[in-house]
Image 1 (cartoon, one colour):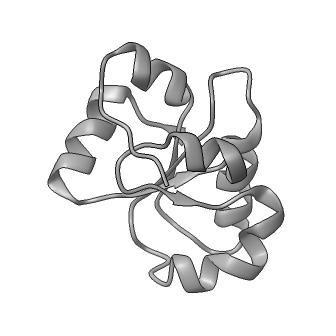
Image 2 (image 1 turned 90 degrees about the vertical axis):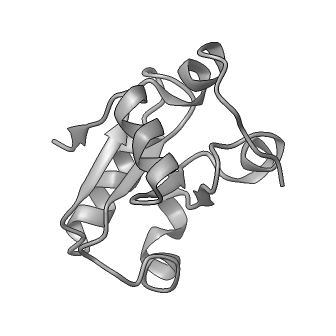
Length: 108
């Protein structure tokens, strides 16, 4: 089970530049709207792209998707952990919660 991170903790980490944020939705969803500085990485891409996108396996990484009903962030987090990443957490509430809180997003 991947450890969770709250919106406030995640915002503080993004503001401090101490976390790599991973958007597990990818594609059009990522292009339309994602958390500041987030990288797009879907479950099917993890094995091939994680070593390049996320070279430091000890770095703080947070995955997210749309909302608590979306399984993508957990699947990406679990796969990263299986590949040896040691500091992976999940923002379960996802971008829906982030946007509803009035926090900034980016688009591609």
